[in-house]
Image (cartoon, rainbow, N blue to C red; front, side, top):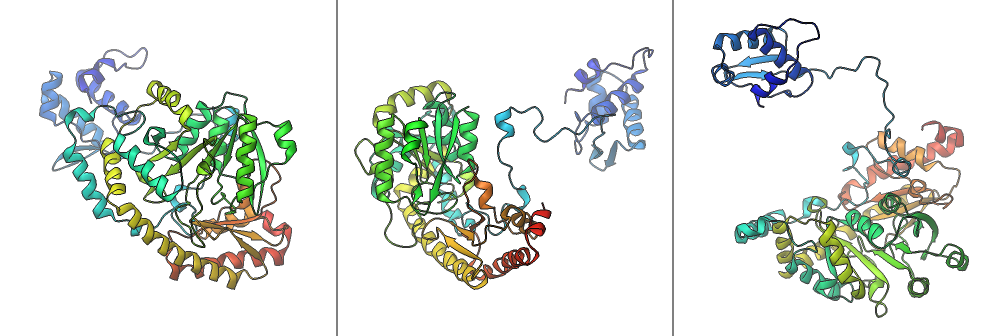
Amino acid sequence: MDYALLMSTFQPPPGQRAWPRQRQLHECLRAAIRDGRLAAGTRLVATRALAAELGMARNTVLYAYEQLASEGYVSTDRRGTVVAALPAPAAPGAAVAPPHAGLSRRARALRGVMPQEILAGAFMPGVPALEAFPLTLWRRMLERAWRALPVQRLHYGDTAGEAPLRAAIADHLRAARGVVCEAGQVFITDGTQSSLDLCARSFADAGDTVWLENPGYGGALAACRAAALRVVGIAVDADGIAPAPADWRRRRPRLIYATPSHQYPTGSVLSLPRRLALIDGARAAGALIIEDDYDSEFRHDGPPLPAMQGLVADAPVLYLGTFSKTMFPALRIGFIVVPRALAPAFAALLAQTASRGRVAEQLALAEFLRSGQFALHLRRMRRLYRQRRDALVAALRRHFDGLATVHGGSAGMHLALRFDSAALDDAALSAQAARLGIVAPALSAQASAPGHGWRGFMLGYAQLPAERMAAPVAALAALVRAALTAGPASSSSSR
């Protein structure tokens, strides 16, 4: 805080005669504390030092501090004078602004999010087993990367990402996911949402049509609406996204977003005939498919499914991946694999519009991949998640027999529990569960367009130990049985 500047810019109330310096300092500091420029917990400069800085007597500063203390604005201890915590004053007559005040219409149309304090509870989708991550090993690799980093590398990084990481990801994808690519097609991003935003803005113009799975991932919906694209929801069934011939004729897409290996949120797997048909249709329409392969590394039943990107030569596919699920969300590293013909133009676009950092983290991740530790970690997590999936399915069969059907448990980190009764209000039941500390997002709330017909819960199981599955499942079943007993009026009245 520049106290001299604070004093020089302070204006007494209109019509007030000039104050003595001790009064001026007191009023100036009090105003700064009240409006938050001097935040609670700030330690004020020692009286002797402040007197020297402002060119005034120390007694003048002592008077101002003592007056502030008597009014409760500061407190004193052996180490000095500290700004006290004060309640924020309400503006006289100010109305409470609605939560979306000032936002655009497309921003106001986005889905709500769950309160931060419950996001780590059972059964929050998308949260990996953080306690099982080899954090000590990761710290060592990160420290090595920082030690080897010359001072020149503290500048902005390559907008496409660090070359060693791009090469390591390309090698991993070719071996583990059947992706056909070279390092020059791999572009590092800040995670899947960053990748979706880039795809929506880079490969479509405002007003272009984008197909989204319905129900589908809210992050894709947000990215497309933010890019002012025309969103069309395409229904999902047991075999994944199912566009009709009329969709291709009447609602020709520029982009098609799909999660073929583990559909979000239903968990269905896009069948091979539909994958090939979607590729052929996209090629004929001049469209690009955004293949979000967000958790396909965790395949629990049967052999791994290859990515759609590698099924045919030069497939019109933008392949998206992330390390938030395989490692930890705070890493904030994802990637896009761009078709070979589009890679140079995309690289030129990023050079003009993006800045990259976190060089050390990218180099450490490259070592994690190259050393084999990433593959080892994946094997361990597959075993752990399979055990937790099995425990959840067993609990659901025991408590939800005759109430709901399990979908999508063959892969990934979550499954879908679809109610047998269409009369149940899954959104109301989800809200009731949240009040019990149980995160069970409603399937109906994952709509990208009206009328998809899925009602039930999304249940993530990766972060919850197997021995703790039964209790929250029993609590959810009790809520559902109570709603069925009470009838439709009860389940909807709790909103």
